[in-house]
Structures are given as structure tokens and as C-alpha cells.
Length: 264
Image (tube, rainbow, N blue to C red):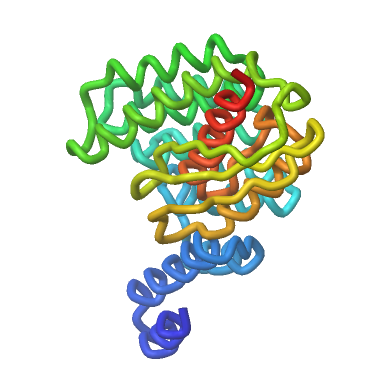
């Protein structure tokens, strides 16, 4: 990040390069530090465009900073890159604007980002407690043919299957019925398998610990999601850490598996 700050100075007078550097800084502050004020500052200065990836990122900054109106205004665009639209589905879901999330999903249903839109729509519906509809969208991922490559196909199919399984496990998990002990569960993260150990004492979740992972960024999700589960004492309604939905979902799904295996 210090290097990119230096590049902004180095490229003074070259508008195209400076804007590129500023948008890069915005993405880094957003994704690596969850520093939304600085991310918004640099994305705005870098000319983040509506309908593009950085434009949706800027809209999320506005939302996280407590201004959903500015976020909503920045999400309005006649044209959208498919990847940016998939990200917009997630943001609309976080904002509680589910109908717009589903409408955006339909806009990219036949593009090469369809599976990303479907899984984000499923996540949004799941967070809203609309489990049957969420499963329908996860099943759309399973039926999709537009995956970027075999690695993406394997990763997203695993996420969809594990999310369906986790939803089905929700109804069977009653923490109060789980015997004291530490239980393990696994799920698929961004870069591979992620293992979680869940400790239950006297009918309550006392600890959630990611014991093994291959995630290379979004480290805040590793602690934020654990803390959210401890606070709620359930895996229901745990919001994915901004920019780190895949990692957060993996922790939630692995925790659901662990608790379910313990309750059986």
C-alpha cells in the first residue's frame, strides 16, 4: 500500500495512471483493512464508475458508513459488468433490498457470472430467513454451465451443496441439547478446505475457532464471523463480513456441521 501511495506521487500529471493507482488504493483499503472511509476516499478520487466493480465497492462503502441512500443511488446504472452485477446482488441483499437483488440476478442469469449471482442471491435469501427460496437459488448454481474454469466449478458447487446442507441442519440444531465438548466441522473456503472447532459448555457456544484454512486475504472474516456466532449463539442470521462472504459462509457452514454432528 505504501508502494501504491508512492505511485500516486510518481505518476503526478498522468491522469490515467493516477486514477488507476487511486482505485487500486481504494480496493486495498476495502479488501485488506475494511477501512471504508479511506476506501471511499480513494475510490471516489479514482473515478469509480457506476456499473463497474469499483463502483459497487464504493456503494458498499457508503452503506457501511451509514448512508444507504448514497449507496442505492450509486448502484443505479443502465449497464453493468456481469461480475459487478453479481457483487451488487450481494450488496442489495445486505441492504435488505431483496427484490432488487433478485432482479439484478436475473440480469446476469445467462452471462458468465450467472453462478456468482445465483449464490449471492441464495446467501441474501438465507440471511433473510427465506430458506426454501435460498435453496432454489443454490440449486441453480448446481445446474449452471457457465463456470469460469474447473476450479471455480468445483469451488462453487461445493459452496452451494454445503449451503443447502447447512440450511437443512439449522432446523435440527438446538445448542441446548448438545453435550459439553469440542466438535469439528469442515467446509469450502475461497482457497480450499476450512476447519472449525466449536466448544459447547452447559448448553451454550463458548468458543468457535478456525483451526485450519488456506485463505490468503480477508483475515477479518476469520475473527468477525467467530465473534458473531458467539454473540448470537447460533449460525442463523450471521452476516458475511464485507468483501469476504465466501470465507464467512465457510465458517458458518462448518459450524453448522459441527453442531449438527454433536446433536445427533
